[in-house]
Amino acid sequence: MNDKANKNAPEPVERIPVAGKVWLSAADCMCGMLNGLLTGGGMTYFYTKFMGLDEDLASTVWLIFAIWNAFNDPLFGYISDRTKSKLGRRIPYIRYGSLFYSAIFVFTWFRWPFGGSQTVLFIQMLVSLFLFDTFYTAIATSLYVMPYTMAVTNKARSSIFVWKIGFSLISMAVPLVLFPLIRPDVGEDPTTFRLIMAGIGVFSFLVIFGSTFFYKEKVQNESETQMGIFRSVIECFKNRSFVVFEILSFTVIFIQTILMQGVLYYFDEFTTPMPFAFGALALGAVGGILFWIFMLKPWGVRKCVAVMCVTFAAAATVMCVLGQYMPVALVVFFLTGVGLYLVPIMNGDVIDYDELKSGSRREGIYAGVNSLITKPAISLANAAFLMIAKWFGYNTALEAGKQSPLAKQGVLVAWMAIPAILLILSAVGMKFYPLYGKKWDEQKAEVAKRHEQ
Image 1 (cartoon, rainbow, N blue to C red):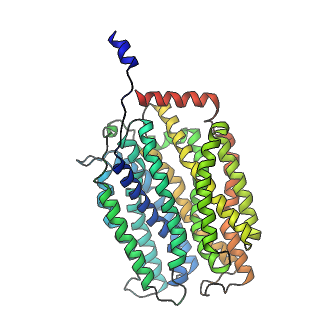
Image 2: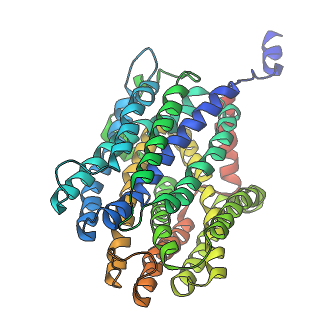
Image 3: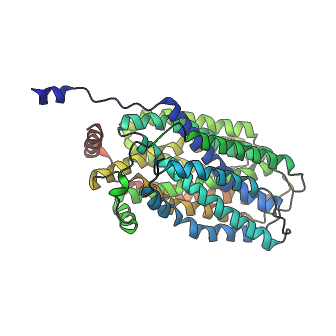
């Protein structure tokens, strides 16, 4: 009798305070915004165009950095999974790392007092990038997995992700909109630019640090059941859905980086109004969320992603040739906003499938291994853009609008050619993605049932 009553009893409702959701999402937004401003093309533009660092040396910085960048994320994920403190496993890194993270961001934009030689600029850019990304890894990875440690049920976790997606629009939009407006041109006084960047750094520190007092980790015993680091990494790559996902994830990170970098050069050389371009991007982001929510059920994630990749690849190809015309540019900006928000949905399915097979939730190591693959995309995108633009004769010493017609065409090719190729590869890769159809719907229901229990 009691067993029957227990079976019919409603499942306990797990509630996360709204303040915790908002502060976590705001911290994630500030962390991503600083990273977008610095690694999304801003640092490369500032050091080459304004401070005078040779483009080949800047490309070398990104390629050297890619080696360290490929390994620090899985290593940190492994360490943080085993961290034990009164604050939990993740919060200490968020709270105390925020000061160093923000400080390095601020001082990156000031010239070191050791002269302005190419060697000094090369070392300054390399060291700044290494230190900045180390603390970014500690904070961003911890913020990424916090929803899974703040809540147990999928319903509660989903309520956190709604806020995170909303704030992510800010972290993506600010670097795209703000940096082109405030960046100093060749020969201009950088004081105002540096003061604005310093203000952003200080404000971000206050938000990230203060956020840690509004949420806490509910699950803290996972460190006792984790595999060794090498086995954990190997198990990730045994998950075929994860391997396919990484093709798309690498593509998206590459595109995000090269778009944010290329847009600085694009607005320098072409007449498409910036408000129109970013308005199209915003419309695409909002419309994309609504469209894909409507189409996910009839099409499924696999088909949605494939359609998005093919459509975006076609637009990027046209942009390489006709990007000087405003209608073409606006369509590409719109499609950029439409497509990129399918990635978190696909990522969630991959982790759910791993849980179904392994019996444990391993978000941390998946986040680290994902960065192992995708973070080199940041370095490659920065280096590739500079090299391709230089092949077409782009001269960083010239003021905005003074490039040759061939160099202007080079900006478009450097901006869009590689993204078009990667998107086609992603579309082909989706043919091998196994998580779709009735069988996967049943498996998803099983995962949901486990969390309810």
